Image (cartoon, rainbow, N blue to C red; front, top):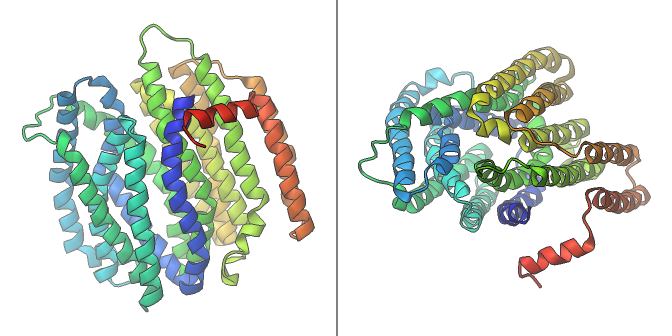
Length: 474
């Protein structure tokens, strides 16, 4: 458990620094960038990220999975090099075609192809390779190195974005150009850290297995992207760029907690894979205990954010404050994602269950698109938020069920139930009025809630002091 916390702290520390900076800058952005411009920006970002996923064929997942099957550096280098070379030969011609026929293919976007869409396409192409080196460093559990890379590149991007947004009149170009520069820097980082793992003759006979595993995971990641971005495309089409911008800003604010969950997941999954690969040790009591503690922490982060969500919106420009319900629903949606991340690793490790997981995520995407088509024309932003929440909820129980079939783990159900009930009681403080006295009351209730959770999962103040000593902090 300590190793998970230690590694996730490095990931979280770097990501948190960036997210705090992004969060603090969001009020600034909302005063310089109109909802309409934000609508265009987030639509283009959605296009770029979707293309990155499709043309990488989810091979970053193969690096994470098969790293543990190769004990020697030479075999790891062959695996990594073969994946990089295949991606270059496969994706480069497609990106060239997309650029050549861009004005026709992306005609649904109400912006000129050059420079806006062109920037996104080039950045998408470069981003694939950064995903690979990040996945390799994560599998090697080099948390310090990966967190340092993440922190440095993201801070450069933030600084450049602020300068360009303030200085340039075209805010959409300013925001996208900073992403483009960041993409170039990340590609250089990929080249630098990949040198020890790139070999000239990378004829890996297992390349077919890497492709099969990556392609089998594609429906999972693609469906997740559909759930993540389909609502923005539909809001853009049905309601216009202004509502797209309002929704996207609230979504970004509500997704801040996902950074916490993903940081922990980066450390948690390699730890579990290593644990599952241990021969002759099928007693996963430590895994169940860790899951209970992580669940309590996820509840704390989620419910506390929802309780104070109304106050958070006051940080934004007045034009963006009309979507408080969207913010609360998106925060809870990301909590459901956290639960999925917490319970799904057995399905990722047991290759036989990857196909089932893919089908579940396809189901989630179908539900999401269907609900968006019905709810967005009637309820606009709120409809899109609830469509996202429901699409995650429908696959949560099946993922827990099949994950426990893939690798049986006896979770601490009594503790999980107690955590859920206490969290529901604390959630009721969300309905208090927005005022200074009630704000102070919320803070008091939050401290009481933290104390109760610590008691349920068996964490004491002494545990915290011991952990600080292990980190050599004063």
